[in-house]
Image (tube, rainbow, N blue to C red; front, side):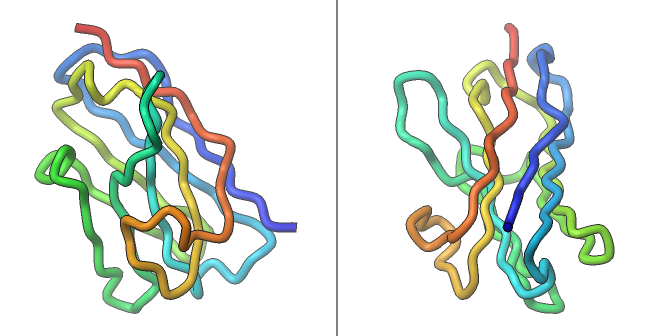
Amino acid sequence: QVQLEESGGGLVQAGDSLRLSCVASGLTFSRYDMGWFRQAPGKEREFVGAILRTNVGTTSYADSVKGRSIISRDNSKNTTYLQMSSLKPEDTAVYYCAAGRGVVAPAARMYDYWGQGTQVTVSS
């Protein structure tokens, strides 16, 4: 059974930094592309960023977080990370990690497995 478990969310102030983690089990982690998505209240789920399964770990980011987010992965720990800095109130959302193979990074439908999400709230 595949499981993805996010952690690291919480209540922070604008301008703060946060690191989210996603631990995967039940799959060969190194063979999966890993994506991060978020969903704010009343809005659709949106792409945040992704890191591919290739050795070079190619990353891509949404324009809304580009330059203040870094996605990384540690295949030895079956974990992917989303480091966000200069947080803004508009970053408030539930953040999800997802796993897929051969994905087009922003396309949520291409990911096979999803975590339950972790809440990030940014106060102004």
